[in-house]
Length: 290
Image (cartoon, rainbow, N blue to C red):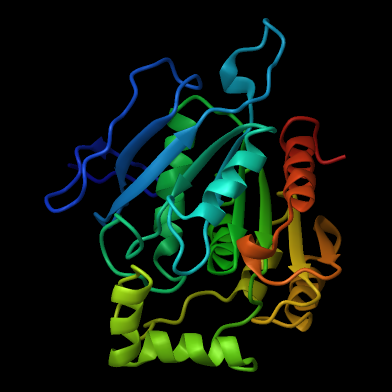
């Protein structure tokens, strides 16, 4: 295995100790694929490609379909039912790439809770491009929502549209009970054991050094890429001042959907909301920013 420039990915057999996956041989854009990707820092990432269910005119090749690269929330992975539900909804609008962040599911490494996960997303986006898709929309939830913002800020040419759902605006937030529990899970040895055996999430013991760019600092750097911020007004993790901060930082190039009655992340996203997200992203990647 060799590492290339940022975002480059090699595909390989699973590393020792990981379950094998089958990869269906077929023309790009026409079959479901599952493989391991390698990030630029050498972490194996479990990734799945689902072709889109939409049908285009015969004169338009499958690669014209937009592809959604979905970044799940903390303790999720590609096989979780709530992640697969997002895939099923978005496939009506294009192909979908999902992956397990480092430290989650069958992926290697340990979670850095949103820091080096940007490299995981970059590998998944690069794979989507290699599969022939010219238009990429990243869609992230909670921790994944912060990752898609930072990825778009650090790699502005990699994505054509960005959707961040239930993301924090700032780091180290402990203002709600769920976030205090999450900080215990991440910062305490006992909490990390619970994460490993209770949530199938292996968490790194080191503090951030340096502290990564915060989501609210990242947002102004995303322009002119279209940006959608989605948040529930009943989010138990991050209250509504978080999306308002992100929207204010985005200015005219961002759009905020504050969803009435919605809670947090994938579990709270209705089928109707996921359909609206898919339609919004297709309008930006295919029909222009209009």
